[in-house]
Amino acid sequence: MEYCERLGNGFWAEPINALTNVAFVIVALLLWRILHQHKRSSVPFDIYSLVLLVASVGLGSFLWHTYAEPWAELADKLPIFAFMFLYLLIYMARVLSLSWYWVLVCLTLFLFLNVAVKLWLPVGLFNGSIMYLPAMLALLALTLATYWQRLPGAMIMFAVIGLFCVSVIFRSLDQVLCDSIPQGTHFAWHLLNAVMLYWLMRHLIGSARSA
Image (tube, rainbow, N blue to C red; front, side, top):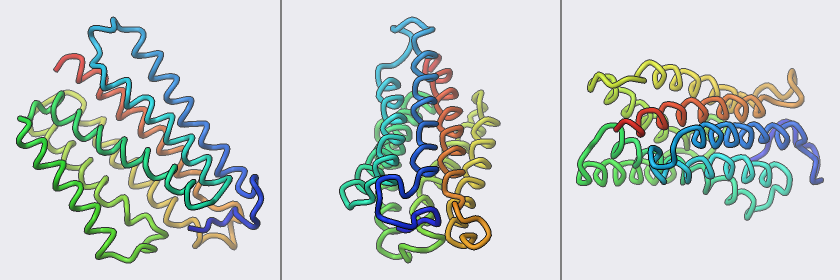
């Protein structure tokens, strides 16, 4: 994928896109600090792995926006998918208290949606943002389930969905606005997603500890 900011093949051909990934590392450090403010026994061990994945998302994206090689693209995508999959699993099990049967059914459906989008929809649709459609649907499902069960944090989840929609718009408009915004808008996708992950994790940490 090409971005407005990338005009050459050098390591720093996308300085803004590359450096804004520090936001994910900052968020991971803030979350780690929050975890350590509680007793270790009160926080599920798998929450720590999600925090590490948040940092990995930033690192992988940094590699992609600097090296721009196939292996770097893989380093960018894998942590994102791993976070989505693990977050979905933990939320359903620890917050929604679903049985393992339904957790597995939902995870299978999530995997199927990802494969279906990749095979049946144009890869470049909305500047490639179409690949996040399964994540949007999964987040909406978690939010509605939280609301229907009258669990705390439903409003936070609705706000996160709105933030996700705005960030996807910025990602999709990156190449469209190249003439008027030479540096593009992809950097806003990074910053908004970092904020989104922070609130998703803050909600999960509070809810999973009491689940």
